[in-house]
Length: 227
Image (cartoon, rainbow, N blue to C red; front, side, top):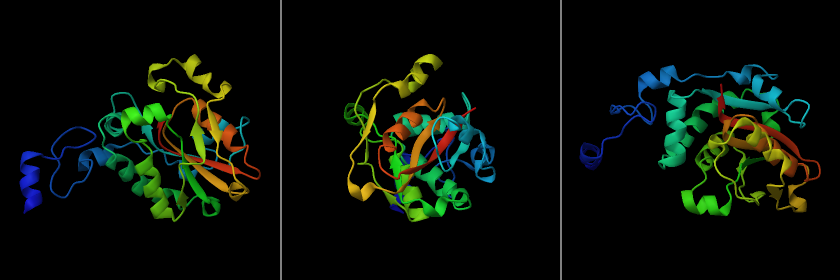
């Protein structure tokens, strides 16, 4: 009853289209859920996400869950996640995506899930890392540990969405990321996660940092891929 009173004054709206959610709907309305463009990357080991990194860095697998289109449902959802505090969007994607990830050969060897980190200044501004809820959801569903202390961001940079393609690809040429390395981290399979895969330069820079860990193997999973 109390929830009904709360919803009367603070109605829940769809993270995709902002329409009012029905009592049985969560995060997104039924219509938006049916129109979310799935990539089906888990069905093809050499998918377009994997090809982003082919010949650049050795990865076990790469996989994105949905396509990110300008002015589309997924863009609205990611915007709500990153800028409006709707961390439940990350959990929504994590719960759904985990069922696909379970079918990928090699997923069973993953030891630790690692998020692309925010710089402490950005973390203070936003108050949370937008991929934390996504990562914790995957961690619970897949039964892998989650660790946001191994990979660190040393250099503050402005949001990637406001940069042109050339500037974005320069990211991997800078020593932006590093690792807090201990012997306990050796010989692990790390699942690196992020919200949106665009050029891949940020993830590539993260991978170069993780490759400082002896015996490290790396895979990549993102909520969305720019398309």
